[in-house]
Image (tube, rainbow, N blue to C red; front, side, top):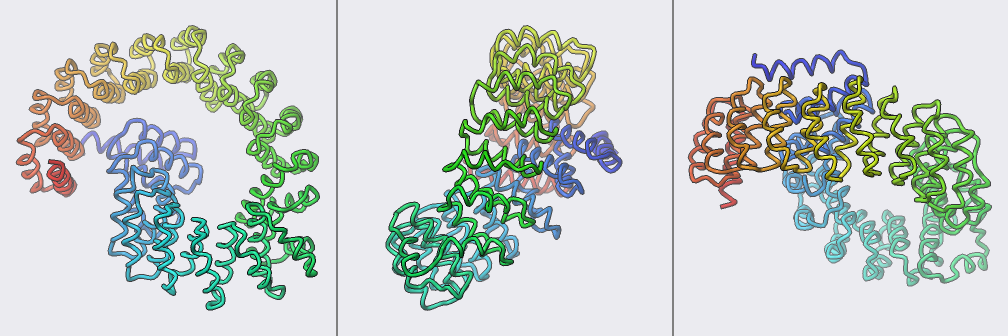
Length: 634
């Protein structure tokens, strides 16, 4: 068993034996190191029993995603676990254009479920670049795939799709999402056809009414009022919600006309809030948010504690809409329940009306730890310097959560006057507080901070030294360069590693020699980070030391070294890469192929061709893929 496999096995065992926090730290370390074999471990982390761990792993993958990671995450779409598939889909959607090309390929996969998932990912990402691929998917033989493709066309918001969607109205199975999509695209030109099919197909009437509301023009108001079905609860409330949306855009006095014909809109809407049908309730909640008065706020606030997540979400949206118009009334209705009060504080942050600052400050002083932390976080949303003093006072709060949230907000506000009170938090007992203080000081980034944080690099506690170097790495002032370079000689390997990463990110060229010395560090993780940083600097003077590192005992250092040489390029680097291409472990051989393909060396084609006959499956597969990309780029 090689040393690389040993290390990966140690990580796997530690994950099996570790608690939630330990597993998170292991996954973060794997992500920081960029170990290629570690990708498999991170992918498995998406199936962790802890939602906190799964979320952390997804964020790590998002940060380090490259083409290989995208390919592996895409294969998760074939897994039976709904949780793993959902996380993979959400991650791929977040990656956007980074993943889009590979996702589009999956629209023609042999598995119809995978094709559906691919369309859903494109829909979530909302990228117009996928228009052509989705257009092709409208011809898919599977109706569910066509359905998903139509939904995606609506979500990406490209008006070029409107004629296509109108034509899809003749497809019995894909008609419903086409109607929804036309509404989302505000396709006024589709209104005559929508009115026509309303009377033809009773199954799509609800969708047509919703689409007319989303289009939001006055043209169909008379049609909607004439067809108001008091006896059909679902259609009734969908129609009222549609009329409310239209009134917001094109006032026609629709609700006055309903009152004139004896329809008590207020009574109907309020009675719907207590029915069992969630769709009816959602329509009623939406209507109140659009046309309600301040007296309707208590009824909406009650819906925030519903068991149904969709009800809670639409209630929150409606409270924001109505509360924006009646901020004073919303403040008067502050609940006592901690969960609801926390949500209300966050809602105030979204509304961003400064009238809400005083009650949030009261919550910061008098609430539970959860409430005070939420209040501290939310205050930054107002971009108001008047809250700085009170936030500063809570940097000494007894609760670590409140200290962390206060530090975070002060950083977001770039509160220079908080600088001296933030320094002690670099020594706080809680990691979240140290990280928030480090980030806040980095965002503020004054010369005073550089001067006073630098001594923390020699602190007796390792975790304090790490917080200090993280802070200095965030500050863009070039005066931090020398301290980051000095940190390459720090007693703590974590500090040395972070310093090397920061230097590479910031491309501090004068750190070239210290980085070359770090290639001989006793810690393999530091050596790996130094090699990666040198690759980022792309200076030919580092080629010789990097070539020497091709003999490093650690496979991941050699991996980073090969990648660095590929980034730097040149004849000498190209010649040196041929040895690991033939003799090293599979991860190094694969990255060597990638590196050589970047250099456009005439010998690349025969080298890659020979690798396509290697006994190792991963090497053969990678050689074929890289050769294909290389040939298409010529």
